Amino acid sequence: MKKTLRSFAAGTLLGLTLLSSCNSSDSSSESVDLIVYNGNVYTVNDNFDQAEAFAVKDGKIVAVGTTADIKARYSATEEVDAEGKTIYPGLNDAHAHFYRYGLELQSADLYGTGSFKEVVQKVVDQQKAYPEADWITGRGWDQNDWAVKEFPTKDTLDVLFPDTPIILTRVDGHAALVNQKALDLAGITPQTKMVGGLVELKDGKMTGILVDNAIGMVGSKIPEADEQEQRQALINAEKNCFAVGLTSVADAGLDKSTVDLMDAMHKSGELQMRVYAMINPGKVNQDHYFANGPYKTDRLNVRSFKVYSDGALGSRGASLLKPYSDKHGHYGFLLASEQEFRDLAALMNEHGFQMNTHAIGDSANRLLLDIYGEVLKEKNDKRWRIEHSQIINPADMDKFGRYSVLPSVQPTHATSDMYWAGDRLGKERIAHAYPFKQLLDQNGYIPLGSDFPVEDINPVFGFHAAVARQDGKNWPEGGFQMENALSREEALRGMTIWPAKAAFEENEKGSIEPGKFADFIIVDRDLMKVPNDQMRGLQVLRTYVNGVQVYKK
Image 1 (cartoon, helix red, strand yellow):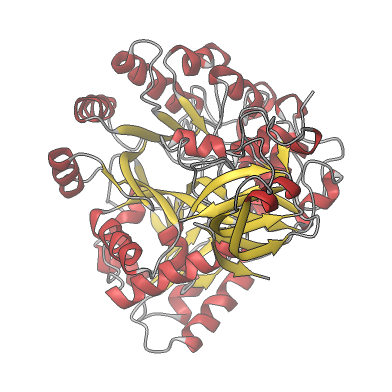
Image 2 (cartoon, rainbow, N blue to C red):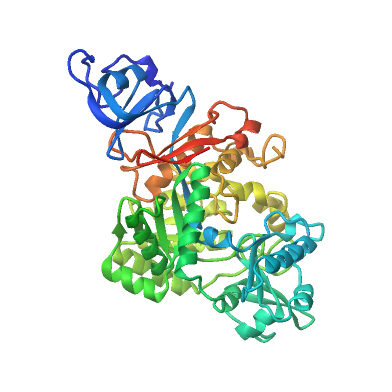
């Protein structure tokens, strides 16, 4: 049974605190910067102990215990009475697109659109709001949410915007709709072919739909954001993250230039968010980091590369062992050759970098697990990751444990996809999709993320999806494939200490313990106790980084 720190007398607090058994009359109180007391504190330590109070000095936690003990031993320049509210370690999104999310706050928001007509109206509104823009960009549409569940075509955009290039990216980032002007600028024709991508044709004519690598041909023509826009994007993203309790994010896919900007903003104090940066494996990035090695500060950690092996299930780009159930003869595809993945794995291992590979389909997961196995050979502590790990053939599940490969999953993908994933996969394969509990059992821990802006930025939605396996309307009754649900303790660990461990940072953050960064949040309800249908209503009241308040509701 879990113990709470309240049940222990002073001096016998499981070794959790630095408190001595002496009382305040035996010695003068020690000066600290902050005391938080009268709280329901989930430490998320090894025993999942609860406490009432903790003290902070120089940005780190120095003691955890009861309110009486902490206030007897310490005096602080600032005290916070939590008034019985619940306190968690700062939340950590193990797989997101922090920088890209910030940039997209300046684009047309197509999330939740109920029809292509609604998408077009938002594009019209975007042009009115930014009439001088050279391009119109947007993201978030999902044809699976529409009455007509087919990909849209460019015809309407060609009529309304003949001279302005447009790119509207699907919710998962693996398909996009572009108009003819954008196709012309990119030099794309019906004859254009590429590895790992598709230019959709209908009756020999381009529909405007591009899948995976084809998107980059248009994307490369969009002018880069200038430095001020990049800075503002990071500031905007951070503000929204703090408001939902995120104090750390893993940003999956960055270039050195963006990492350098983050580093400069961290050092100047403009940016507080802790970032675990996964680097894009382009030549410039490889040349620099392989020559110089990993880079680490208190707020920035660069020691991994983000690799894409296949596309997404929703756009039928995920690489499957057998054809899609709803598209005869179509298997999806890999985004590079098998040899390229083997070469990258060898390079990552040689230079001491973590390899984090996007793999959705069961074929892509099998290939990458086997390649990882060829390099890693046996159990190890290199913590190489498979990002998403969505569809796993049962014959491959034990490879995660055998080679110590971490599955990095996003619970809301399951509850977003569950309406149509069975159509893509069929009855047999859907049973082996989104297998969070089975994946957890392989190594004993599993980092959880959201993949925002693909999914909502709010990590509590992921908590609910992991535990209840339901959407925001608490559907389906009883949950989706509940044999793979996580417990509440597992879900909270998956949003705090386990992402820290997956990033080699478990000794500095992820729990409320002495010696760790004082990153924590005060919230209005206890996720360990409220009914499932009340989880998503959680409100973050305050967010702290290094013991400094960065958000207050």
